[in-house]
Amino acid sequence: MSTPRTVRAARGTTLSAKGWQQEAALRMFHNNLDPEVAEHPEELVVYGGTGKAARDWRSFDRITASLRDLEGDETLLVQSGRPVGIMRTHEWAPRVLIANSNLVGDWANWPEFRRLEAQGLTMYGQMTAGSWIYIGTQGILQGTYETFAAVAAKRFNGTLAGTITLTAGLGGMGGAQPLAVTMNDGVAIVVECDSSRIDRRIEHRYLDVRADGLDHALELATAARDQRRPLSIGVLGNAAEVFPELLSRGAPIDIVTDQTSAHDPLAYLPAGVAFEDWKGLAAAKPEEFTVRARESMAAHVEAMVGFLDAGAEVFDYGNSIRDEARQGGFTRAFDFPGFVPAYIRPLFCEGKGPFRWAALSGDPADIARTDRAILDLFPENEHLGRWIRMAGERVAFQGLPARICWLGQGERAAAGQRFNELVAAGEITAPLAIGRDHLDTGSVASPYRETEGMKDGSDAIADWPLLNALVNTSSGASWVSIHHGGGVGMGRSLHAGQVSVADGTELAAAKLERVLTNDPAMGVIRHVDAGYEQAEQVARAHGIRVPMREG
Ligand code: NAD
Image 1 (cartoon, protein in one colour):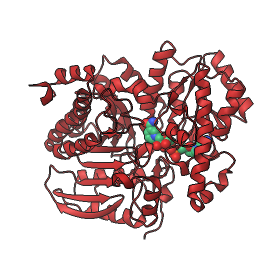
Image 2 (image 1 turned 30 degrees about the vertical axis):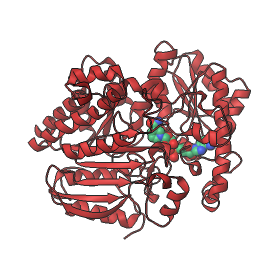
Image 3 (image 1 turned 90 degrees about the vertical axis):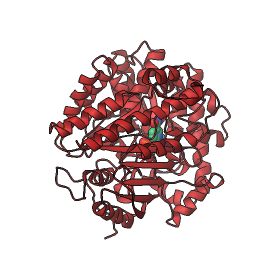
Image 4 (image 1 turned 90 degrees about the horizontal axis):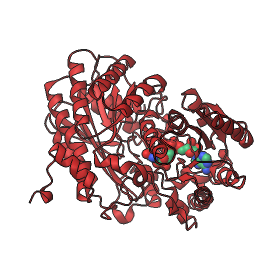
């Protein structure tokens, strides 16, 4: 049956695969396509424009069957969402190895990718869509919360209370923005052209209200700001029109960013195109549509620079909108920075990044238990404690219950060990899948995002994510992935992921200790190599060996 259908991960402790490592991959694969999790599950699209979990429904069926049949010493190979081989390996080897959307340098552009995609030869894997560790909007919520907290620390005395943030896009990732702003006590106006996305974010409690129009949005925003009351407001419209309109009205905006799917011009609605005509026009005339989308992004970014000139804090939130706007003819697009050099790089130097885990039991009580474990493990980290407590109260789970928090070198291995002990002791009712975003400290080369403005100019060096995947494969991860494109689009990034299963066994404990030590250590050494003193200190403190610093 190779037709669309509703998919939901199995819950509980009954296995349909031959071991928990395989069962975990199966449940997380299916979980990516749960209608609560995926943006467009009928098309196998999980998030981020066209980021898919499997190439087509027949591939979905064959991956499912292969994982059920896979032995504990075999490895399934997935090539851009299609299962292409099963090989005899060994029990320390990953159960699944995944390569998605990779093209040779000169061919790595959207027209060539789409040509191959149309022939059924490849698919877009985004970061965690094709690598089966997307956990819904919460996945980015913590990163977005951290970013807005850093903005608050930099410009607004540590709180967004009394400020208004303007942004756009309420999709899978962008939908985290309103809640991240209100968690920092600010007011957010979010422009979205798809009415159903506004409803969905309100339903999931990520967005507070929908405004009837721009005047209403501004009224609501200024009233809340004046009372220093957090509030998030969705407004239906096209950002390429609304941003310039707000600028020309002199709207009192303090912070501006954007999370439309700008990385893919066909996933950005140009001004003047009706929402209903979007898909048809993009499919019928992709080149003409791309030109129009880039022109609109130029207007959108020109307004962002206008707000910058007026004194607002403005940053690119990792969707390549500056480069698309540049290609659309706006020469000042790079006047504002990307969020990584602006706020996140110091965390990367400590091996910190988006650590996440999902309860394969499906029981929210298991995540509550892990939340307590995190609070017990790191009692001195108030920032982390605040996040974990707020997430416990305010984050609605999508699909399998899951949690994310940013942990660094040493912390990830400690958490992994503790989680495995809790599974072994029966305090957690089934194993946990422990993974992370590809947007991490040592797993990505992306000159417009994670590696923008590296100290030694090594932004485009892509050996690091490949080494990262090899290290995790050698260290005992349960599945490992290498992707191209991700959040910034074809030709602009290479990145790798890993997921490791805490099933309570001694073998899992040994694997987790190595993977969760070596994976963040890749980030530390990447930043040591680029000349960051902070990373050198972390390497020394954790005994991470860097031969070029030893002789
Ligand atoms: P998505 O496709 O699920 O959502 C994008 C939303 O933008 C859609 O709801 C769409 O209707 C809306 N949109 C498109 N054009 C618009 C316009 N002109 N005006 C108003 N709304 C418009 O994508 P997503 O998963 O939310 O990701 C958003 C972007 O962020 C992507 O480019 C993604 O690659 C990037 N991204 C960033 C990070 C990060 O860490 N910052 C991580 C992953 C992805």
